[in-house]
Image 1 (cartoon, rainbow, N blue to C red):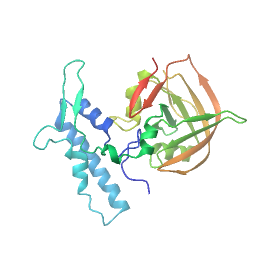
Image 2: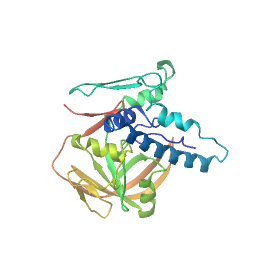
Image 3: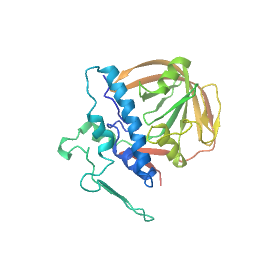
Image 4: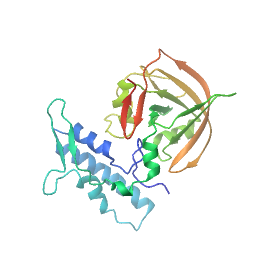
Length: 251
């Protein structure tokens, strides 16, 4: 079974490093709000754990979600608010260098385009494992979270849209990756264009409408195979890339 609470963006145990740093920046002026948000996630994780493992005791969830936020005998994360400053940290969940999986390290060295998959419902998810295969017909492949709302929507509708994201979409990508809370829902902010395959960002460089062909478990993800039925391209824009747990852009 796929391990609980893995980051949808990088695959690491949640809260992963980018998520922790992002949350600290987002809530740097209100630690109480941060603890309330993490407490809500802890309750949700506890409910999920109880459903899957009725005999389990989720006591460790407190340490996983809140232990890093409250400093023990000092500040675990130091945030310098000066302009241009960096966040200095000690990662309590970091795996020692000698024990890190070589496969994960290899994956981290493969730069990947950041895309947004959406489906009628609406539902959406940031995906960095999208591959287009030309042919007759043209096909599209991708690995998605089998427990995500997106997959439930795709499975029900049988179709979905894929939009390549650019550097201006960093916050959008984080929101749909589940790294930040989304008051009002994922689609509450931003400009969206409705399509038969799902809403797409109005300022994206284009989108592809896909029909679901098949899906199967692949590693911890779900390998989705689809036929491309429609393509709408705008002016060419620079891509947003995901590399070693961070966003990058071509220079």
